[in-house]
Length: 183
Image 1 (cartoon, rainbow, N blue to C red):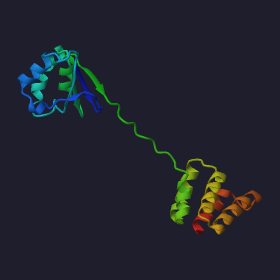
Image 2 (cartoon, rainbow, N blue to C red; image 1 turned 120 degrees about the horizontal axis):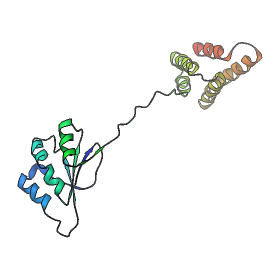
Image 3 (cartoon, one colour; image 1 turned 90 degrees about the vertical axis):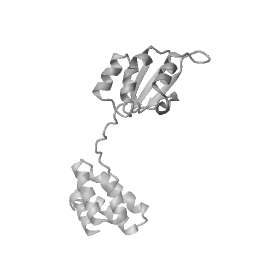
Image 4 (tube, helix red, strand yellow; image 1 turned 180 degrees about the horizontal axis):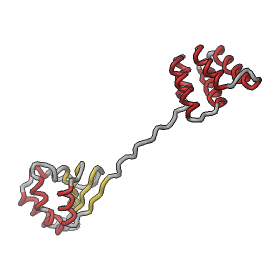
């Protein structure tokens, strides 16, 4: 049996194919194991090594073998893939890692406040509003960070901003923006 694996870790005896002649490979493929049963041999990088054509020619011998030969490669090109399919190989490709979408990090506001970075805080607030974050949630996050920093004045100012916005002194978004710019 032949398997071609791209990008996966496989179990089996690592075969040092660079040190073996073509005759030794044919003998290995056609000889039963000492104690019976089939063995699994892993040939890493063999198809695209300097002896790659030799291995493509030996695929039918490997296919008729009682043993399993696994060709572990970084990638498979069309010619080698076709030769492997023709010999009846099972081809396994590792799924590519999906790119993660950008997700808004609402703790960026707290981080900028912790550094007392006026510009960073303002940019983080603008990103929060673009993402649809509620001003009350952002104010709460900022108040939490101020308490964590043990900065009583910042904490008091943020709590007063929150209450002032509910008393009609202005929208909380604008009050927080003004707070960030005066930091």
